[in-house]
Image 1: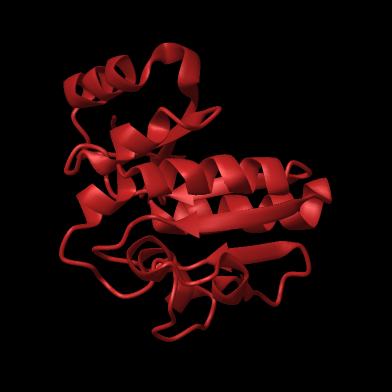
Image 2: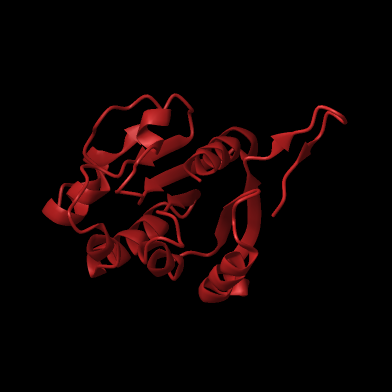
Length: 173
C-alpha cells in the first residue's frame, strides 16, 4: 500500500509537473520515510500531539516537486490523533495553503483500523489498494460502500505474479 502511494506521488511530481505533498498517516508502521532515505524524524504525530510548527516537519525529497510530512514518532493513540479536530484543521489548512498541489495521504490499512475511514471523509478521492490473490472481494465491496462509490477514484491490484508461459502478469482478485 505505501509503495503504491510513494510511486503515485513520484509519478505525479515527475510527469504531471505538479507539486505533491505526501502526508504519512500510517503511524503504526510508517514506511514512506524509509523509502525516501529518512531515518526516524519528527512528523505528523509531533504536530498533532505537541503543536510542532508544520513547516519545520516537512521533508524535501530528491524529487524536485515532492515533499513529505512524515508520520513522526509512533504515538500510543494514533486513531484518536487522526480523527481529532486538530487533524481536520490540518487537512483544511494544507488544502487551502497548497491549493496548487496534489495532497496524497498514506493511511493505515482501511480494513484494520478506523483511521482510514475517518480520513476518507476529508479527501476528494480514494484509491483502494488490494493484494491480488488474497484480498477478499466481499470485504473490498464493503470498504467501497463505507467510503462511498463517489469517493472511489480506482482500485489498484498489487502483488501480481509473473507467468513464465506468456510473459504477462496475472492475479486473482
